Amino acid sequence: MQRWARSSLPAPLTSLLGRETEIDQICEMLDTDTIRLLTLTGPGGIGKTRIALEVASRLESEYAHGACFVPLAPIQDVTHVIPAVAKTLGIQESGDAMVAEVLSSVLRDRHMLLALDNFEHVLDAAAPWLSDLLAQCPRLTVLVTSRAALHVTGEWRFSVPPLPVPDARSLDMLLENAAIRLFVARAAAVHHDFALDDANAESVRDICRQLDGIPLAIELAAARVSMLTPDEIVARLSGRLGLLTSGSRDLPARHQTMRNAIAWSYDLLSESEQLLFRHLSAFTGGFSLEAAASIFAMPEWNADGTSVMDVVASLIDHSLVRHAPAEAGEIRF
Image 1 (cartoon, rainbow, N blue to C red):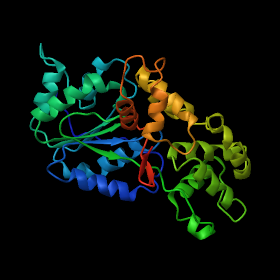
Image 2: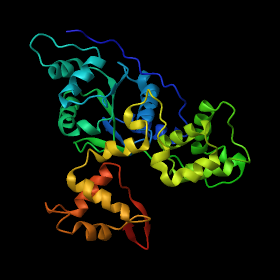
Image 3: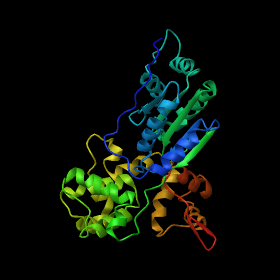
Image 4: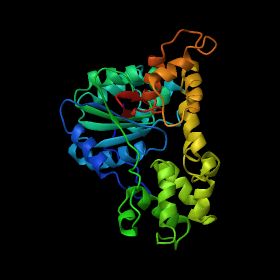
């Protein structure tokens, strides 16, 4: 059996903007003895992977055996999850021993942080294994990024929020906003002399607001300054999925367009969940549980008798629906 040396983390090629509060909160959670499994949840493009990398980098020196980052998105066959983790750690099978047994044996006395990225599509098969691994390895801490919660014993969740959208109009105040700074940085990367000024500040603000502070959407919109002005981008945002299609070639396919980012999550839903999710698009400004129930009660849409509350809860778990501020005491989503 080959043991592994302390792993190095992948080096990000871009700066992380506006996530200081979230990173501090996550590091504080992982610094406690009671949290050994923390799942960063949120929709596609919200920045879970980038935050997890930053957290692992900051905390690596606090673990005797360092931190290791394992990307799971490329895995199509769930049986390859455990071998992928072992391979990243430099662990090989020994004789007739199963790789899962070897992995737990090696990690049993290791004090380390294991970051598992994009766990959502291997949940059903890999979540029970991960729970067993933590039970067998008392000094192991696991940080997971997933569009859906794992729902295993001992899991703590941290919902990654969008970047705050700007309300200000003055140039100086806009430059302090993280969403604005992200747009400007990514725009300057494709158009070297791009800068925020009095002429384009309002349009850039409107772009970030219309894209709800979602980092991937802002980055895709910023890439368009190579051919469009911010005013022209705003004018085309009514068809935002068609506009937000210019992701970098080295990104996974799910992050090259916003349509792909949404489709990745949608394809993980059950038939009932997909059905309700599609028809919730009829509501403007959110919906109540009663309104969702009025749709879902139709026999031709809900043949299996699933509770609308369970389906809405699952859509929340998959980061496709969120609670909205209550209006007159009514719970809205």
